[in-house]
Length: 540
Image 1 (cartoon, helix red, strand yellow):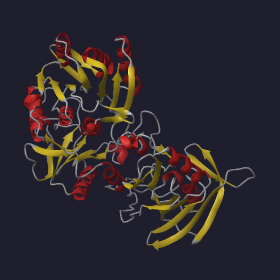
Image 2 (cartoon, one colour; image 1 turned 90 degrees about the horizontal axis):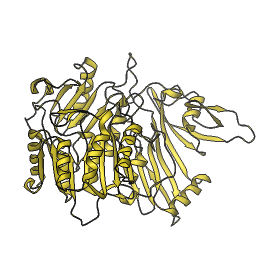
Image 3 (tube, helix red, strand yellow; image 1 turned 30 degrees about the vertical axis):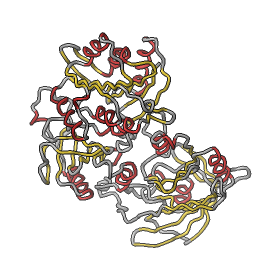
Image 4 (cartoon, one colour; image 1 turned 45 degrees about the vertical axis):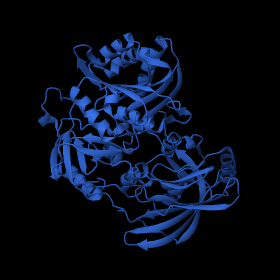
């Protein structure tokens, strides 16, 4: 994804389907937020210009005060040259021409109006590059930088961009608009730099089928995963995320050499075609299907385990790789396979000792104590232990704790040097408090609903504050609390309010806070709202 980086500039090739920045505080991270909080060297990253969510291509960020000042001036004075490539399936009346007008917002769209004295000018130069059967390849050079400018001008002149439904384009798997080239002066040396991201229109510019449905595999979805997943470190992630990827009610995870599809019922013909196409795309050995259900309590392992759809039978246990760590998973051990992929970026934060911009996790060189409540198979514990922490993993299942010990072994970590506690989280937090234990970080990632003899019934939607209250006496001063929930009905604002109320009642203060939603391979949209909510808190 990175095209260029030095101490002043970061230039990327943004994939289609990813916002430049988050549209709201609790929406999915845009490219800017994801990058800014990923590496300490990107902590001062600044947005200099933007690309629409569905537009791919060259995007430049500033990394220094000098860069921000210089680039802002160059863009304002129109000294930055930008060249876009687009595809349309409509004929053009001219092979090259210039469109000029004023743009006015009208709801979600912009409309073109004749230029008037005092009005802001929007100008785009168009040139036909190639004419192919069923489509034309066009070069567009905007000399001004208005929102949706190229899209509006193309539609106004009778050739809306393929996939741009908002402006009358023929439905397709993405908006076929790409920022192919950008030229500017380096902010300190003055050298003329040109950054290129050649567009690959060889991916199917498939039109919707007769039923109006999207193509089986969306290249934009594949490109997004390729941009955020480092294949040498991670071989397991969410490959298809429901309606956000154009496939309502179907979710597909890549687990090393196998696929796991999930939907509410049995796979219908269309969904099976999706799965078969994905199998061809990534060369998986076999594919399984799991029926999504909220009623798994009391069911047998055989009833809740995924079922083979086609291909090879997976080993009873096999290893996947995430952020350079190894984890054991199983498709024959019930409803859950052994690792929640949507926590990948949060586990990485332990490995790199970095929560967000200006928010280091632990002081360097310190031996830290981490408590992982609701530890499951100890994914967080493995990441923390690999970074040098001493971990205490707490879970109500002996089976999962043993699974966790195997995960330690897979990563060359001696599990005997770490603690594994079987029992109820609330009960054991009370016990540990009485024993005077304290921790540098406490992880709270509970199930949405749980029930035990010691703790009774617990529901995240109404009881999360009680969990925080129980954890705070164990948290050292100026230590970090990681609070997370996948309770879809619990709104982010209420989730944070519950935590804040518990901190205040304990007469402590939040010194730092960083909220993160689910990672980009679990994209958030109107059709596929956010469910995972996570906040990192440094508490006095």
